[in-house]
Image (tube, rainbow, N blue to C red):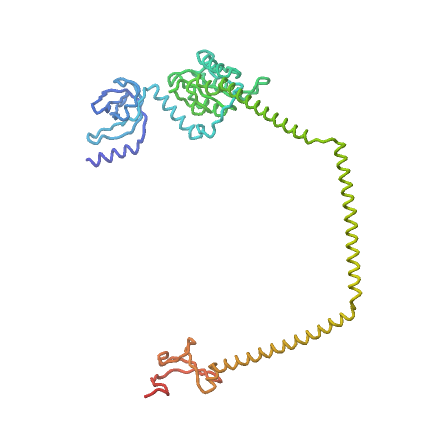
Length: 446
């Protein structure tokens, strides 16, 4: 029986991993353990439910008998009594619970498509020249937004695109306003930023900003979109899709507009730096001009110096030419005397005699070298013949080799039936071993 109950529990938990159930609470019990036990019923059935302490601490509304709720939980079986029950993981009032389920479903779908990815978020302009404020024309949102914007950066232009921010007509109106950002404005500066704003409210009040058309229109907007919807604790689908989420409309103005005083201070500092750099450059230019001016000389003086320099170079050239001419003449006379003192025919005769003598000496040296090589070669041939095994064969000896080509020098290397090769001085014999007789060598002492 225990095994059957356990198998039934496992089957139920595997088949129904997570369910949403709507019903009315009855028989609510809160023992000292902190767990909640109650029955959830509708017109046709009732289910026992348990919500343990770790989960019921997250419930932010008073739970009582008769309250209609939406429960998210796991189907299970209490084995001790065999009771079919739900283990609750989340509990919400029935009206808001359906919206919450739709919210979570759309959120999961858009997240899977990548609409919430940080990589597709666009950076905001450093200076928002023209802001489209998409909100209700009534209420405190416009006043709060403009008050902060005028204080921080009054040069930004704001155009109100009025839309209803609650009710059935709100989603289509918001989508239309976002699509207006795609239309050129003619002489008006183009849009640089859009702010989607409204005050706080319940999940149902903010539902226009949790619809799929609004989410996709934000993602397709041609300019960055800032979401400033509700209070700091309120989150909508629009917040996740927008390029930046601001907790309130006033905070949106703080985030998108640069601080005018900080910009003025930065501009003043840049102006001072520019002036200091300009003064420094002027000082350097003045110093350079003075150096150039000091280096300038009179044109007539420069011409006179160049003329004097030319005279010096001409005189040096003339002296050098005369000196070179004298050296060349002296060298020419010396060469003439040398040529006159030598007889070419006699010198050629001496060179021929020397060539003949050197040729005869070379032939003698070659002959002596060849004779020495012949003598050395004959000695090596005699040495090789003395140790050659062929000489031994000529004296009547033979050489035995087995099938592997190894020399047989002992009877231990042969056995009856082996084939041996006998090498003689004038040929070879193939023999077969028929018997082995161990005999001492002929010169062995008995």
